[in-house]
Length: 326
Image 1 (cartoon, rainbow, N blue to C red):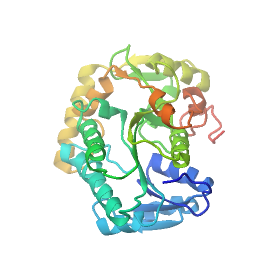
Image 2: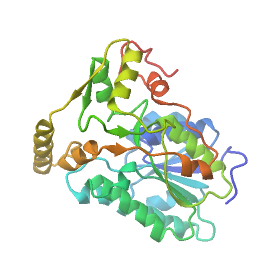
Image 3: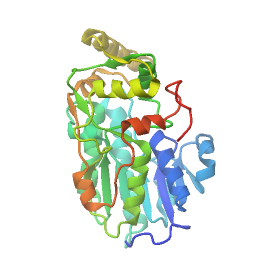
């Protein structure tokens, strides 16, 4: 497909639009002039997106009729929907694998001669699929694209830890840092890449403008060579919050007991847990560093925000910051 010469009234479909990353992508797409159509399970959840969404399709990734309405006539699909919490492998696979299979099948059926292009959010965790149910499901989702996408032009992105306005997973950690404590759940020498959410949305725009984007799986991060250590993050928080922030190692047995108890209670009471033994293996992995070389070879994209600039634009975690986007 040709690149978008004029975004005005060019339709882009988005799944997972009510999530942290999806909502940011919708906002950026709308500001760029695209018409945005989203898939939602409940129209109530989309009310906060009313200013940047042109059309709602009610349904989910297991409703193929709704998926058909979602992708009909669109230039591209940005697939952000995913499950990050669960107690069993099936909890993750139902959406992260089977949901993506359904989306690919419908896209190929609805526009068989000229299917829309697809950008799917995976995770850097897919690099180590044996660590957790989540990592395994993301890896299997990538395999769906590699083996079943047929004539689709597709791109799978492996972001590292994502933060920014609207994030709920890392926000409690940053709030704790604003009080002077940077908790370290694993090895003191662990390193990890990060990315500010608006930089992911910027990559989506670059991908939409690319004439013939190659299919494949690509990592991305904020451009910091070698990523960050917990000491680096604490130093950033120290400067932004204008108070000392020290790293504190969380005792391994304490986290392990909490994780096992949480998973057991989740299975008993039917809620979706975040902290599980499998998630702990992810958190304790010493190397979540990636680079941008491959994706920058195929897209005209540069990250704009490293950690200090991104956290300065993230409201709600540090009382000395203005609490607004800069």
